[in-house]
Length: 155
Ligand code: HEC
Image: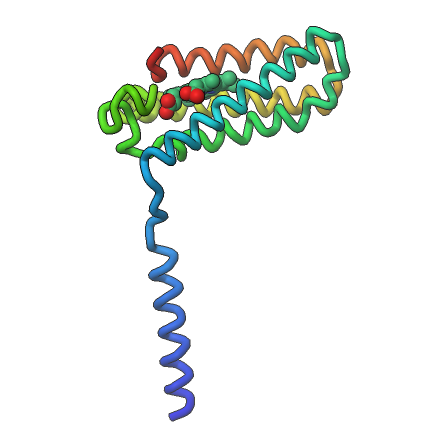
């Protein structure tokens, strides 16, 4: 009897844990757009700080944290663009995210992945304190920002 009761309780707990795990996270579309815009702006600030260090001929080793953050942001980008958060759904006032992000999803995700990979290399070069290679790679990462914006971001 006791065993049955315990089993029932355990069963209930497992059921509720499973249900909780399956519950979708609820976040408003406007909050998603605000969060990703902030992430984009901060990645731009990090890129500017790295460029200032490059131009000043400063030690690039100290930029490893910034570069690593930009790479992590790159890996997070696809998840920050869920369906229903583009211009078609929210309007051009609310977001610059073009609807091609969802109709050409594989290409959008490939661009985000390339960006993340190149930013990861930037972090490696910062850790190696290789100033010349870091400067060259910064330009590659900046181009990866642009190549996505050209197609998927409205002006
Ligand atoms: C894979 C695509 C992609 C990559 C890579 C990317 N962006 Fe963006 N970015 C977007 C999209 C799409 C928007 C529009 C987001 C919105 O308005 O909801 C955007 C918006 C922005 C904005 C405007 C934010 C605002 O306040 O409205 C800035 C600044 C920005 N990106 C900077 C960058 C920088 C700097 C990089 C590279 C370090 C970068 N982005 C890489 C797709 C990308």
